[in-house]
Amino acid sequence: WQVLVGIDLDVAPRTYLVSGTTPNLVVSNLSGGHTARLFAAATVVGATHVASGAILDLNGFRFTQTSGSLVNDGTIAASTGGSELYFLGGGTAQTYSGSGTIPSPVATLTVDNAAGVSLDVGLAANVVTRRVNLIRGVLGNSNKITLGNADTQATVTQIGASGVTGTGGSYDAS
Image (cartoon, rainbow, N blue to C red; front, side, top):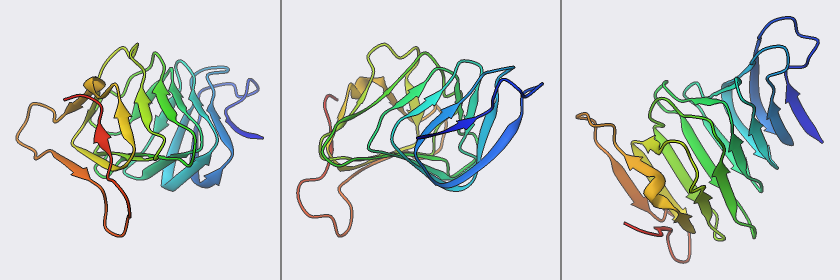
């Protein structure tokens, strides 16, 4: 099962509002790039693919990627304050990959997967974020993170979380 945002019958690019929990999510570029804009927190249980020319707009909300990986071949818009990419997993490692971009800093990047989350070494640009929450698991290829945006806003790395038992997360490299 999957949710397909945009189909080839759309005559022009459209914006679709997304929230809640979905199975696999595909943000399509058929008949022009479409936009999936969060209007509340959203969780994908499975894989997410943002196609070339398409946009996943976090719009100031949390986007939780559960049990699958996130492939960004388009754009993830995170310019609205409070936007968060949250990787939540059980027993399988997750990845963030693709040829796409995140043109503005993500407010928060969270890793909560004991099996870990890896940023693909082939990413075209680093993921810029103001805060990294390493709740559980290792953030692999963490050299692909830029903490801060060369401005005066504070940056934070949080290890572990209140109420979480066991070892907090970590970067694989400094």
